[in-house]
Length: 486
Picture 1 (cartoon, rainbow, N blue to C red):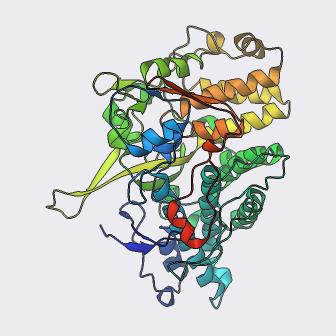
Picture 2 (tube, helix red, strand yellow; picture 1 turned 45 degrees about the horizontal axis):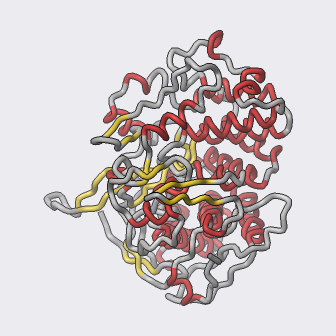
Picture 3 (cartoon, rainbow, N blue to C red; picture 1 turned 90 degrees about the horizontal axis):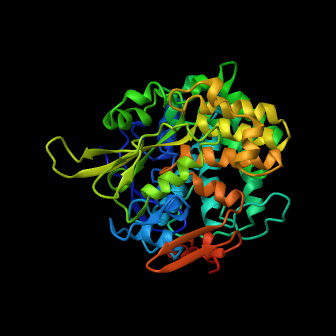
């Protein structure tokens, strides 16, 4: 393993990056030594944020409650209470580290793009250019989703965005501008649109660690779902599945997974060989070690709330995502786990990592189902939901467990079919991605209110509350960026 000190964009600080065991070894960072497509590809192995958003994203959502006791972690505590998160940039799983890592990854992508622009034959680098553009778009999308007011389709979106950086970082401290959220989305779309046609899976040794074709289209389906451009969501989702049956991409929780021990599930969930995993990112993280023990986390009451809400088909359906515990009240579903890398063969110290599935086939299926529902293509949306349920309900029987529009309307007590379908999708997604930080994106997209109870106090935030936007790292004031209002 190598440890690298890297100048981080905007804050003007140093950050220790992580191990490259899964992603390859970064070549010499001197641009003059990088000349071939293979060398640029090697550089791009580090164009992904090697830090995790899961802890603070999950802690802000309605998936967690105050246990009263447990692992005291600043990010977990402050995110749950919607305070400014005081965890510093060198603390794993903090927003400050995630900000720094996103901009470091963006800087790598920009460095690759500059090398390509200056090459004698830029066309031979098309595959690398495509990956760099998608990686740059992804980093900015994640940053604007957490650190700016969430995008609202049909609105001006003129609130402050985050700097969209398109040049390599060459100085420690540089002045940047916060343009609008709308501008950031325009730039993301530009990079996605230009990058996707250039992606070539043959350029990767293990494509799941890169923006391969499926991951690129999947990311586009997420982006256009936020923009509510539903025809584009469907088109990109269909490209992910191609000519294959969508069901062959989904995790088999009620068959293959059902017989696995927790250890086997941990070892399987984030494997590159799992077809559901479209993009995996290696993250320096303690989340796998502490996820069950955080004070603000999944309780049995929350688990029941999440998984009983998913029983739209009928009250007797049992959703298969097994719940385990580490001591009294510390619950977890075996998905994300830690792998520990020693500093050397004989060392007793090292670095903890979590391999994070940041884009999966299940998300793509939900994106398509939501787009179909919003376009009143109800039977097609229903078909996607039944396909998903067939992989999640114990002893699934289509005659007994078949989801219908009538069942949906009855369960949600609504005469509006679209409303019922959207509620079903959001509940299914909540169950699917519990303890993975994805729920917060849906809560932001739909402006769902959130209420957290702690130490006798109740914290309730509506859709427009500025506390739903993470505060920028204090150190960015060195670059002249105004902080978010509170």
